[in-house]
Image 1 (cartoon, helix red, strand yellow):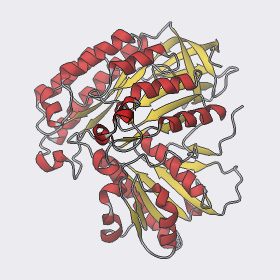
Image 2 (cartoon, helix red, strand yellow; image 1 turned 90 degrees about the vertical axis):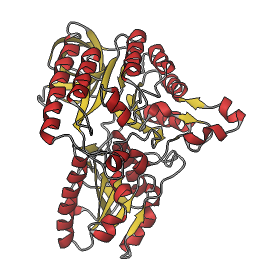
Image 3 (cartoon, helix red, strand yellow; image 1 turned 135 degrees about the vertical axis):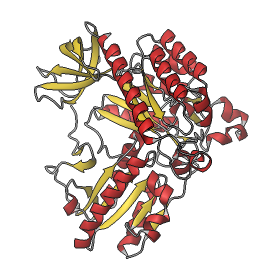
Image 4 (cartoon, helix red, strand yellow; image 1 turned 45 degrees about the horizontal axis):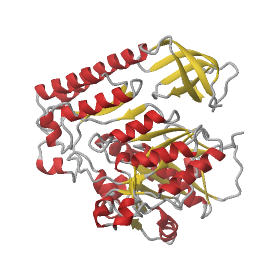
Length: 483
């Protein structure tokens, strides 16, 4: 029996059901943008705030505190946040007691600019400083500005039990690593989230066990680069070579962690994101193939199909190495789906570089992907060393060609599933029909079925009879053995 979770995610902000009764008197309105790690962090923030007397509200006008958890990975994300801050400040002019804080990557990157130059927020808190929120809130309530953007050398939140505000009671995020050491020239993550460090594996397994006890059916292990997971007792990954021989011998990498998680809860589905081609090992793929509860889907960002652009991006893999890895995945797991991230219009990208990207997509035929125009991020090596010299119209045209090709390949992959029976986990009502459920299969494809006798949280065997480029359509054949 699933416990009722009073929190829900409405597509933009993380809110509490208005029907949920709570005696707490201070209200926080929390919005989160960007990657899954940000939404996971927001659950940690809500856990910390709940311990000092705050409850979440979905009504911005009832808030004593407004927090916005931000993303800096693309310019569009930052522009969205700035527009939201403008709205918050209009509300603040009529509510003098209201406090506004910026969390996350944008807070880390811009730091004092928000407080000192623009004076649009009361508090700026970086991704590793959420435990300091009680002290920072006390400071702003005393009339002072507050800032903490110090990056940690250890996993910061392994001992915190998140409040699952970004969950339907079925799926949950579990953070396993923080930071990134790869220094891709286009990326701000190493500067906003720091160097790679991993979380104690036993605390991860304990969290999975707690989620299973609460009725959760699926978890996603999260990190900027999950394949870099390495536990040798704590500390930065880059310091591993300084560890003792005993620590090295007993260390746990991602393949070992993945197997620990799979064995700890054999009926709980396990996903992970995000992988890096240079760090993904064959052993990880073998572990996936050995355990039915590890989903057959790998998100494997490539960014470009051109070696010239990959080198300029400081990606530590070549086109051939990437394709060799794809071939190894398909050889070990023929039914694995692969998705991608792709950036078009990187500085100096030629028409031939663009064609190489399209040809790589033709070779792989990804199930789906996330595709973007390059936007220069201040502070990155690309911004310092390279001119953003590809015309915006050319960027837009190239992006359209990439998107169009991906839609073609998504349809191709989905058509392969027609007349097959797949297992899905029902997660929510279909967006387009109140008479249908939406769930995902092992390959992370969205599947729509008639509601019939099934409910959210059920594992159902489904016969696929139709599809679009984005969705599989089928009919339930009965509960699967996982129920």
